[in-house]
Length: 462
Ligand code: FAD
Image (cartoon, rainbow, N blue to C red; front, side, top):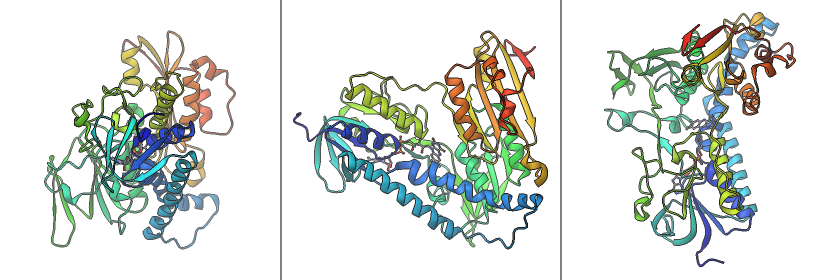
């Protein structure tokens, strides 16, 4: 047994930290895990989970409307924001309890405190002032919304953190940002009846996603009544006497709204963590620099999840934690695999995607076949809803491998999970072609697009 108080000290009780602590403790290691806010971290407490519950809540008005086409006449409708918040909080409390229980059952010591590194192998718990030592330190402190303090009036704005706890639902909101968090919240608020404006400085929302998904989603959002303002940015927010906010933009727009939400990226939680006391290297953004095995430049310090700014997603943080355990405690060096990560945007309609967007694939491969289908989903026929599903496969002509699959439509996130398995397995377009369709579904389109919609040679349409 080592002379340290713990074999492993994990800072941060989120997706990555909890998984690593639980597995290491399960292997008989003496593990402590410190969490300064609530166990479960961003994903469970103020990220993926409450967000998805809000998405469900915001979809009901359309369900009620669509019901009429199927002969159902829905009576009086009334929405209670406080009821939604209370139900959401109850569920989050339940999940938090499960996370703690998992740690307890595995034998990890739970420390409800902020932890900071104060010297080699040494940490301080802020709640008690206690100092402890550990043979290895794992940093899994995640990130937080970028508050942009340089913008006048930024202190008047909310971030996704506060959006989960608003005392009342605003009548109007301006959201600035074009990433998935901004887009998802624009759809949530709009669905709940809030007059919603999305302001993004780029030419099109959702940079990094396939352009057909980006433009078709933006058009769908506009049809639902969301005002999307691209190539613009909020410069100044001020408060009027009646408490409402005035947001002025670079292009000269003025939005008078109840709330302004900033969703302009996230910053790693490395401030005042004591990294400099032992010389842990960070990049210009403050993210911890790690090698392929989540090792920092200090031999007993490791980092994973959002704080390393690799791919900021819950399953990635969990996967990195599992690889850390394999490498450090099971004598099985395992690099996290960041290739072909299937992911979703829980917009309305959703985007589900895996692999390369067309523009990136066109740079990487000499010749591509692109299969593209845009159609009205079956449910929209009787409901009369004006909406489209879009499906796209990108195929490397040289070996017929499907290198990108992109879906915009209902349950596209669920579809992305399954098609992710196919791409990870290296499926070719021929494998798709010889797969029998499931009828009638939307997804059958993915195995019945027999002829390419167009080809690209050296990035140009052939
Ligand atoms: P976190 O889960 O952020 O956990 C870090 C923990 O460390 C926090 O609980 C924090 O309080 C604690 N901490 C920080 N500093 C200290 C300290 N010094 N001492 C003690 N504790 C400390 N991902 C998806 O895959 N799908 C989604 O749909 C999705 N939706 C999201 C929606 C929103 C609004 C947000 C903000 C994020 C979303 N994410 C989603 C991203 C996902 O939440 C993160 O990628 C994931 O939580 C990262 O896990 P982590 O372990 O690195 O950090």
